[in-house]
Image 1: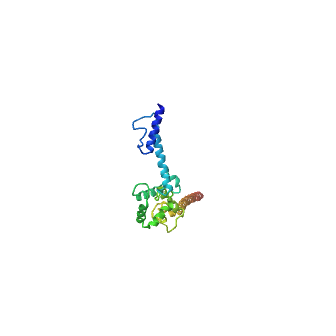
Image 2 (image 1 turned 90 degrees about the vertical axis):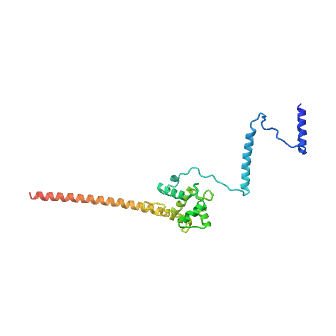
Image 3 (image 1 turned 45 degrees about the horizontal axis):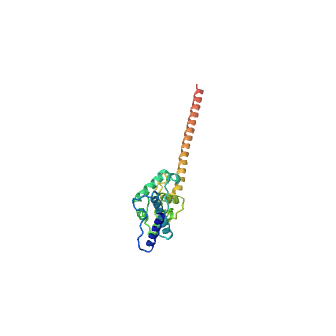
Length: 233
């Protein structure tokens, strides 16, 4: 019986190889062979095949690399040089020009932004602006990369005639209580604010010392007057 079945299978294979018969699936739909692992194996092979095909396309220059985006980002802890209010102001500015509401400012949105700020840029200029802070190479600005503009501006790392410097200067982001325009003067504003605070405290101390001195002089005059008054009694 087993010999007849084996002979039948060999005969069928010869017919398929000679083109006399079309190959068909051994397991027809709905039939169960006792093994339930075939669909899972097929899915795994399909997924692996898709990954290998994707890698082959990237190696051949077809398609674009996509880097994983930063899932956890806290601007208040990463950008400690800015106050919460400053970061909130930058976030408001970012959202204003994020027309697509996708949490990114792309090339066209940046173009509109620079035009609104009164510093229009060429196409190449806009691409260079993005390139300077585009850490994940996706050709658009995330909010974190947007904050990097102001960090670079505050540290004096931007060229005076660059588009990013113009963006920081014209954004009117408050970096001090007096509303200094542009984060470029962030540290200068900080020093000025500290000096103003020290001057204010110094004036208060001087006033307190003056009042103390005045009270002491009044006390001495009253004592002298009482002493003189007692002399005539």
